[in-house]
Figure 1 (cartoon, chains in turn cyan, green):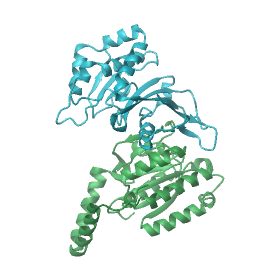
Figure 2 (figure 1 turned 180 degrees about the horizontal axis):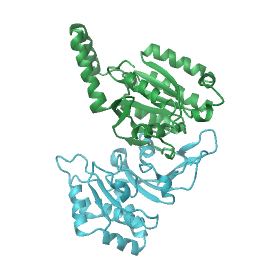
Figure 3 (figure 1 turned 135 degrees about the horizontal axis):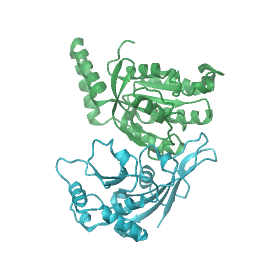
Figure 4 (figure 1 turned 45 degrees about the vertical axis):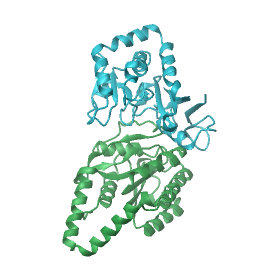
Length: 217
Length: 238
């Protein structure tokens, strides 16, 4: 299993985001996909220092999957800009992706998983499954969930809820439904994001083009 | 980079448009131009892209346009991450005209972004205009970035086909304006500006150089008014 890292490098003649681990053996197309999708979307990460986002996306005609663990660092660049992120990316075979997601879920404390299960009420599950069923007129089958962001620790409940949904048999059994391995547990913009994406509730209020499922209240 | 050969469809459209231009009276052709202009400016959005080395103000310029040219002192962008960020079509008051603008994506300016994000954006957007942002720092890096873009235009004829205007913006005039003139700064870029002039003549697009400050707003509105007027299908007299 190969691991890659994208970091913001300040020393050297070419500062900025770059792969800081060897990329040998990875095809150009796959590398471009990883580069383009490893980081969650949106502006304003400076207010989310310490936050973690798990991002999973298919590569190579969906035979391989990239699993990116992104952290918002406290790093600043030479002009004081914040919101710099670091991504650690693992490349997996697509068949092993649900197992990898399940492993991430069981690694979370039981109290967090219980809290996540309480968020996923019957009616919310119904709405999630309804969104996931492909319909003729619905071009964008993206499922966007929202929850109030307070701190990285509290957001782990949302991470657990997202992993529970992504690994659920109910969702995976849907023919033509969203790929289980397309999820982002924290993004600041739903556009150009995974089939299953979670964003802070404060940002979700301005979304007009997708019906957001509110996990709070 | 691709060979950029026009497709059969492109060639057929060129032949039809060329033939129609010869056959249709100028009054009808002018009405058709006005219709295309309306479609771009009011409905589809004018396709343009913003490029430039890191920290030159690309994200801030897009925010300035998105906020309808409002004051930006409170805007605190972070370095744009790998892959950039999608920017949907939005409306903005440019001079006295409300226009819909289509920048495609906001991309980062580091070297690692050029061959990936910049090239993908250029190919995908097929822009009518390019805004290239620079500032008074790091001339070697700005030169590399500008040369990369000029090379990209040469090597991607299909993507460059619609290009009408290249705007070179020397931003952060609030920091250099009291010590240097725009001419002083451009002295460092003599070879690059010569290359830009020669390419613009060869490929038939216009170019313009402007000194601006996105923090104070100095020069931005004038530059944007001229830029977007130049890239619309039927430019107005300013």
